[in-house]
Length: 467
Ligand SMILES: O=P(O)(O)O[C@@H]1[C@@H](OP(=O)(O)O)[C@H](OP(=O)(O)O)[C@H](O)[C@H](OP(=O)(O)O)[C@H]1OP(=O)(O)O
Ligand SMILES: Nc1ncnc2c1ncn2[C@@H]1O[C@H](COP(=O)(O)OP(=O)(O)OP(=O)(O)O)[C@@H](O)[C@H]1O
Image 1: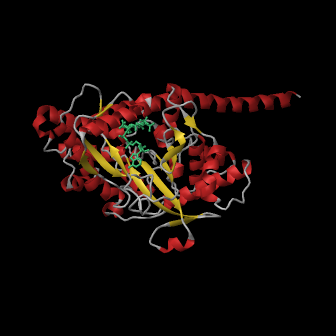
Image 2 (image 1 turned 135 degrees about the horizontal axis):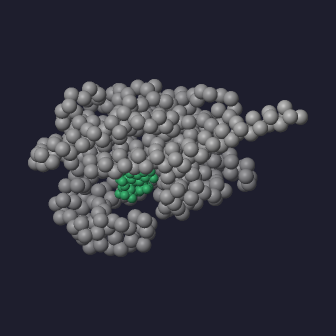
Image 3 (image 1 turned 180 degrees about the vertical axis):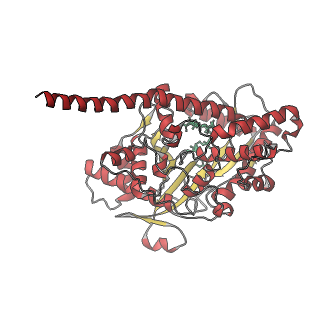
């Protein structure tokens, strides 16, 4: 027996932007509808939890707010939690297993991954060649370290994780475990045991992690502690995450919708440390085994690929919509820019044609598809794992085996709020900044290194001649 274990989600907004309770309710309704009518179709019924709106006593909300305020990271306090409307979203706690209806008193391990964009743009609108070679995440890393968002760059490359190739996936997950940044969190029984609490403050002590994980992977002990033990446990963890990520635990309506063949564009990133290692070893072709169609990574990638034009091709279309709205502001609601996110909204997203007939309708479809893609590029995947005995596993639950234990698991996706229409100019600007920074500070510096190497060789040859 256990109580229902839920998560409450409140709206936040910049201070003094007082919204009426009706506006809050409308906003929350939009979020729920978007999950229900749109994201479920793209990601699958079982992976998406749209939640429901509830009304809470204002006194309770105020007390809750006071209680959590000291826990909120400082960098997130630019927005205030809404305590005036009493409305909130009620979601299942995804750090618990979704296959169990009620919280059970059994240990649960939960891994949250924010995988980011898993493909390299294939659009002909891309103006800088580097964007066809190096993925946005890898380029962005350099800017983030320069800006002080993170202390060290990560070796994680989303293209390795999304490759479906186990070796590349292992490398990607190991890299996430080395530098979690905001891409990886691990919870034990709902409590954060690994990853960043707030920006910069990252715990990445593998021995400590292994200590937490040992009872899960080696329940009857038998494994002495020490570096070997730590390595073995981390390996087992990476194995279960890979298996869960590749599992297909759902089907969905848009499942067979081919946004773009994955073969379009390059399947690896030149900046990936895995790729560089291969090149160093004389191998030039990275294997990408491809993802199984039913797995959440595949669905995520397909939704991300609704960004078919790249921000460079999209921005002029956004401007076309903007121009139209300036002339006919009252059309904003008919165009469903801010919802309602209903069946009609979903249907329009299915038109993948790339032939620009110069209409506002074409531009709008591309803009809305781009917003879905942006959302899918920023969502998180939650994997909940719970040890089970052999006889328990006969039920209809997915199971993953490790050398000394077995787990039932569930996979879900979260943070599926549609990215705002107004965010597009920022995307455009940021894209330029990321690419320019990379070209100026990384590529330009790498090239001299290469040419210096070359020069050294020449010098060497010269010296030999002299002798
Ligand atoms: O643009 P990106 O790729 O830096 O993504 C932003 C995220 O940064 P990241 O690169 O993951 O560290 C960023 O993550 P953090 O808040 O920095 O952890 C947000 O998720 C942001 O979304 P929003 O604007 O708050 O809705 C994200 O912005 P959107 O671009 O998705 O709107
Ligand atoms: N249903 C859930 N179950 C368990 N944990 C959750 C759930 N929803 C969110 N979380 C946790 O809370 C974190 C923040 O969630 P989310 O990004 O959806 O919040 P947000 O309102 O968008 O806040 P922010 O603006 O800070 O991103 C997630 O990364 C996850 O760790």
